[in-house]
Length: 127
Image (cartoon, rainbow, N blue to C red):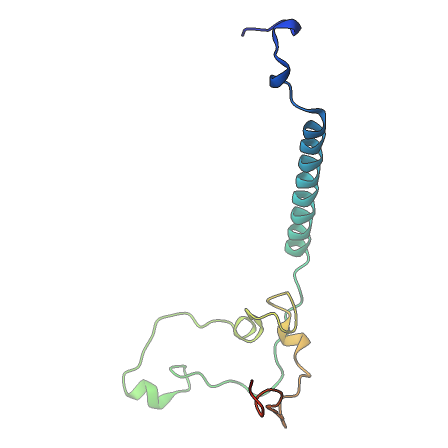
């Protein structure tokens, strides 16, 4: 490797001190952001939200062992049934919680009926 003497280096090749310090600040911030993200992901994987099974009557599943009408028509499947906890707790929407498995618990007391919808504002007097 060719090592240049200090007098051989042009001043235009030397990185400005402010730019050098800003680069260090950027790298420090990037490492901090990556560490915070990794900590959050690790926490969520080690402490998953609790899963609750809804209370109520048993769900009749088409094609299940008790569905004689479907069985008599030849409807059969060898697929393993998805556990009730999985189909009643997983949710891709974030209206109630940011955790995909905690929506059932948080939204259990949500009342949808009677529901009133009003349409007003500029609908009556459009511009």
